[in-house]
Image 1: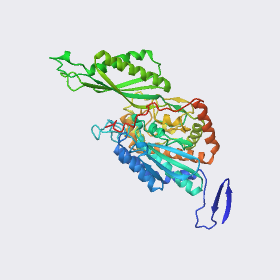
Image 2: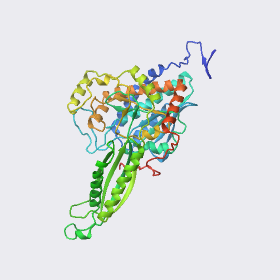
Image 3: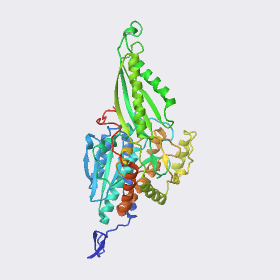
Length: 477
């Protein structure tokens, strides 16, 4: 045996032709990703068919746990008192690289894998944000990294975090609050999209609440004076909030749906409910705006002779970009390249584009990498809370036809085809390659950590926007 020293590692190389030689070549992980490609597609398709919503993703979560367990990960389930949350760990020692894996679907967006609107299950859910691809890619990237650690003898820990209920459930906030990321050095994540981008980006902070008004029922024709309409409370609140829109910062977002408006026109509604989202790029502004919405609710109850219960449903910080990590991911994305369509996929894309009038991205742009520049998104994600605690980097790959918006049936359709699979596979390679670079270059991790401290500021103390409430495990029932 010949002993070769590499830093603190001592690797044993056998000179016999029948032995596997340890290989720390970072490109080797791409080959290992390729070896997981078929399994990745199978898992993604299974999750796409299941289309389970937030905190109800029992089978989807178990499928990912089983796959990771088969590949010798130590799997801990029901993390943070969430039945579908889990953490799967492989390796030992520092650094610890966490990879996020989402897998929840959206209500009412069921769709077949075809370029025309085709509901296959009336009222069913659909993966309109591509989280089935997210979960599958992250998990197979983790497995490829585990194999790379084993082959190369490299020290480090891979921590795949199964994060349920991103869509309005703030799953990651509860995991962060429970300390799941306390021992993590870097967090990697990605998201399906209609283009390829690894630029530093932020999102809006978000706080949501259900406002349930309680009145007195009465016959709406013969005894209306004896009733107090809970629906009047909802409508009065909405009217005041809509007047607020003129007097809030322009990059605010206030939107709502009436989830309960009463039972029948001839009954003064005893109960009514409205569900609000409040967004702004600054978390402190969100707190202020939500207080104003709450004041409108209380005033509406007073003015209509009703009572109102307010339940904070979720709250997310804005994503804190990390330029050190974004540059690394971007350089790797440029090296890997974009997504190309075969003839069948091109036909699918051309057909689905007919349902996307006004789309600004051109067909063919899925082959390109978007320029490196800061991007302010107006959506929200519970990744935001994680990014304020640990250096975090994310990116998007073209899993949808260019011009496709998230939360659309077109996104569901493409996500169930090879177009979605190709974008997912690109994401798997980028996750794995970026993680290997970090494992081999601790100075990059140190620089990312220093950047996070500067961005947090000296007085930063994390406090979840959703307060101390427990996970709303039934919010999608």
